[in-house]
Image (cartoon, rainbow, N blue to C red; front, side, top):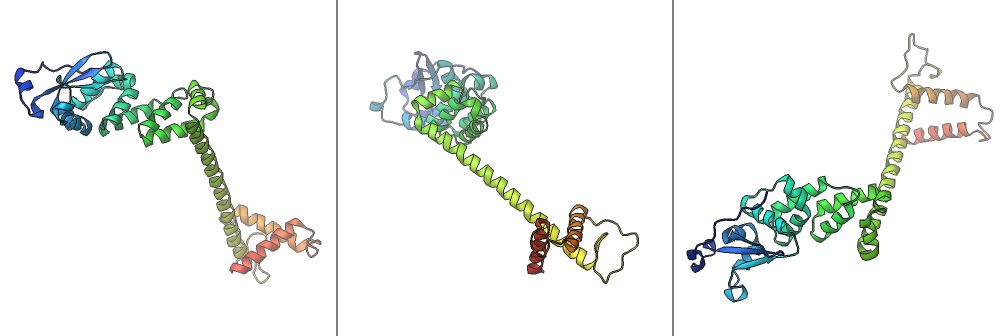
Length: 281
């Protein structure tokens, strides 16, 4: 969406001292002058408002504000957004990087949010490092985190890009940030896997204790208390796998000749289960 210039300001605009009745010329790097109502600029950006309200001696007689260092068309799209609050997907595709920088410099949070979302959607292996640098400079935490996660996830591919080579040669602090993030991410993954493994062990032990109590009080298909008669048409319990394994281990424990000499690993495990059950029963 290219910005359409408003009608040229009238003489009365220039004579009036009211900010709401004057036009400002935005001057681009290419020398293009974009007239825009001062009230639009002041209401859309506190930075522009501050510039416009400066005493006359601190501003040029032409009432102009230079926006340099970005393409002229990007500036037109930026001013168009301040006027209409809209930006097309095509403009965001072409000038999203420049618009994010402008929205950050001139404090336009709504545009900054739109640019952040658009750049996140367009992240690739090839542009992620450049986008990360921009997110860092423009204080865009959501974009920064998305970039870091992509770099961490696909680092083997990212380190082959020109962007990564540039960072290695010219920005050692960012390189260190990235490597620390990758290391912390991997540490969290290892910790998460460890906790999941521990949780799985606790669940298995809890199930084993339940089955052991069930076997010793009610009895199951193969093992039961001495004073319990086998029930007719007994069906496997709802924890069949664990219960079946315990019954086989108990049968082995009873008949194993190495049990007392602690020479049998299987019997040692059974002893541990008996001790654990005794401590919590």
